[in-house]
Amino acid sequence: MILDTERLLLREFVVDDWRAVLAYQSDPRYLRYYPWTERTAEDVQAFVQRFVGWQDERPRTKFQLAIVRRVEGQLIGTVGIRKEIAKVQKANVGFEVAPEYWGRGYATEAARAMLAFGFDELGLHRIWASCLAENVASVRVLEKLWMRQEGRLRENQWMKGRWWDMLVYGILEDEWVEPLR
Image 1 (cartoon, rainbow, N blue to C red):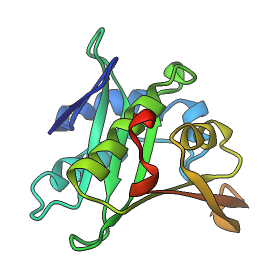
Image 2: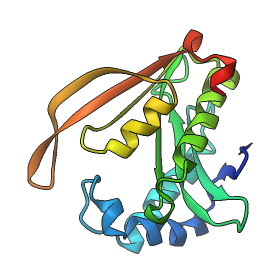
Image 3: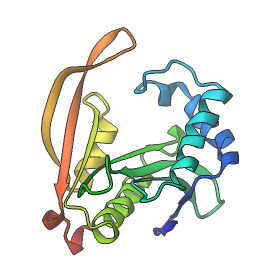
Image 4: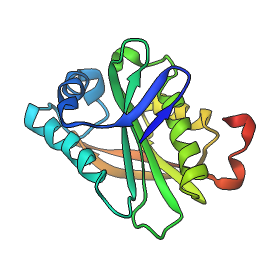
């Protein structure tokens, strides 16, 4: 599966992508909002292998794609949409982008393509996302996608020695209109 955007190519992961993922997942800026304090080659190989394995699932319920900049073919992150079970018409969307590419609209562009895929190709009724409340960049991306904040789960995530609030966002198929694409 391949999705094209103006600046990005969203493609299936291959096993050898782990090196590019390790490069950005080792960055302290990236690690700030994740439960781990470091990433090893083995951690990231397993991370990428999970996405490769999802490609063989039938019926397929999880689509996790590599975000690649068209200009130089560099893998800069991942974006995905995941249904819990095949018959459900809702899914969650998630994304991550290498810190050196933050603030350039890549996460929004990739996530927008994934929302379009979810509504137009998978026929979803609802797509939701969650993020740490303190991760204001992710909040901004979700709001640029016209997702609505549906709730705040207070002290819901234990990570790095403290409790973190989580925000839940959602968008329904009838809210996904042409001008937003």
